[in-house]
Length: 178
Image (cartoon, rainbow, N blue to C red; front, side, top):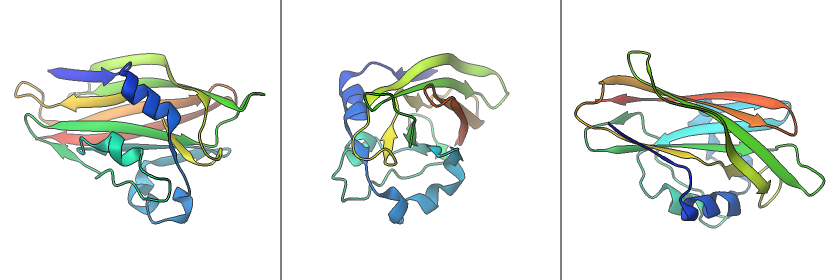
């Protein structure tokens, strides 16, 4: 099985830290992702599984445009699915910077863990735009389905942790490996 977590790709890293999409709360983008949204005391998170290999280009478009991430719920042999996580309204320090950590798990259809990491740095620094705009975290999980992978429902669990605001948001996405 090939499971790639893109922790340190500089392009992805820079894009993730440098761009934020504004005004999603006022447009028709969020209703299709309603099941993927969580919020606690103003801190919000969203998890999206997409088969769109151009997710980064779609995310870094003009703030006046609506990104189309093509929500996906299945993947076939040789195909990829990307799990993207976004946050908004983190607690900021005196320099207006956020500090977000993540716990990550990829769970196979039989319940066993394919991958697990705790306290991964997911975002540290200044957010672009307003604090209530959505920003993307790193890592991005890139799952490539291979013939030997278990068929069935795979789950991605990610807990967003606002280290300054002491908030935790458990997020779950799932997809079917066909």
